[in-house]
Image 1 (cartoon, helix red, strand yellow):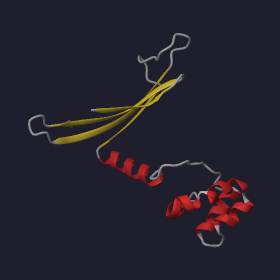
Image 2 (tube, helix red, strand yellow):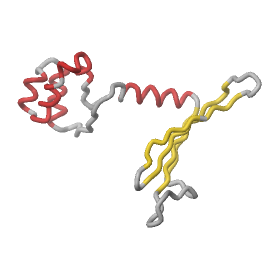
Image 3 (cartoon, helix red, strand yellow):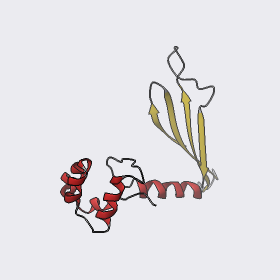
Amino acid sequence: METAVVRNGPQAYKTATLWFFGDRETGEIKRRALSVQSWNAKKGAGGYDFTEKASSWSCENDEIDELLVFLSGELGEPGIYRKVDPDGSLVAVIRKVQAGEAELRTAATLRPDLAQVAAYRDLLGSRANRVRAPAS
């Protein structure tokens, strides 16, 4: 069993635990399970109410691998991620840059919030091409 504290904040305590089940004699792992849990802080008393989970979620075996692939693909590089409106002008600009219809520095003049991205393009190198518009 391996556990990571995902959040230890004033309003909630969250953990992710990876369980391993198997043959104690051979050491073969027969099953894995991932559980993610959250507990609310006690109101006015300090600490957390571990008697009742606020929420929990789990997956097993191949589902864990699918989740890992998803997270690695979507958040594969360290950095700042920003949710954008799929119908907004920022997505339209990103799509033009992806299609080669606009340069990132030129696009930044149209959208001031892209200026920071353009300023870091040289630092990012090929990773700058990973900026993706949401699927339409």
